[in-house]
Length: 412
Image (tube, rainbow, N blue to C red; front, side, top):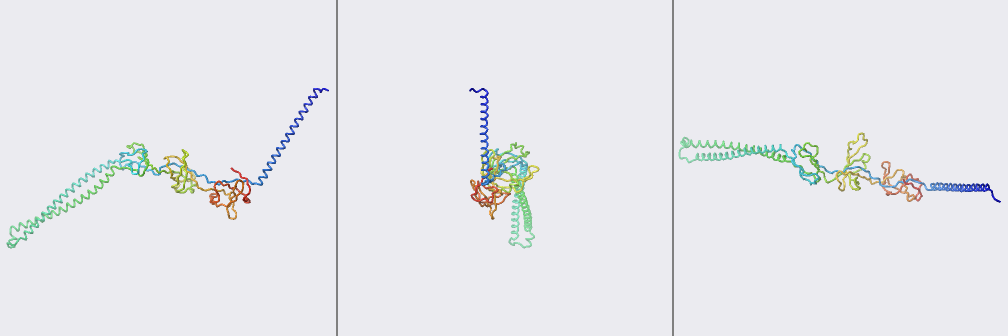
């Protein structure tokens, strides 16, 4: 019997409905299976978390260094400014950038006023020397006159003691006696005058000798002050102002600046880190224009604060100086890294137990209980002994944990 067209259509429709119901049933089964798997997963996670507690950890490491900005400078700087009392600058004896040794002549002054004074002192010395020579001649002449007078007196006395060939009365009244008497008186007068002349000449010579000594002292002093040479106080590099030497007397710039080959780095530290630094502490020096890293040490820390650089600043800063172990170019900007060389623990990683300080370490998910020695500093503990770098310490550990217990850890 042939099926009609209508029957075939109904059969196709019913078949399609059956296929959809089958697909729906399969979909529901898959969804139920997924829900069961998810439930099992969360149940297992819950059971696992109940058996293995989870902790955050602190990894023991040295603290990052404190960084300070610094500038490379010469350890010693000699700045020579124009000094009008020394005269005018006569000559610059060095070149810009020249390296010089200690004691090298840098530049000279020429003092014309002192030159005039020197000329006057020389003229005065010559006059005093001439007067001294005249007094010396007078002294010599007076000594000759004195010698002659003494000779005449001696001869007169000798004649007075001649043999008594005539009576004493005749001797006293005769012409020879009168002549001898006059000669004696004249000789004694010459002697007195000569002695006075000698005394006067000697006094004059003493006076001019003192004058010449004083003038000589002034002459030597003026000779040094006519031409003054400025020298290098130490070995270093010269920096000239670039100003015309004839105009340097009116310039506020130094004539010559000498910078030592020895270097220093100037920086500053805030009051919060001041007590962390100490003289002779080693530091790392990082050059900002390259990846070069040098070693150095702190040589000086000021005890007085700097003047506030910004109005309204609430904290003080203090200069400190670092000496590098290697040469760096003048003026380079650097960073100074200072490491305290200590390792810290947060307070919530430590448990006090029977008078001991204990921590709980994570060793690949296994607990290790260990005693440590610490000291308190700024709400942290400084590790004295008992822990090494890179070891993992549990945060807020359960005091009931024992060696060998399993734990889960969470890393930041």
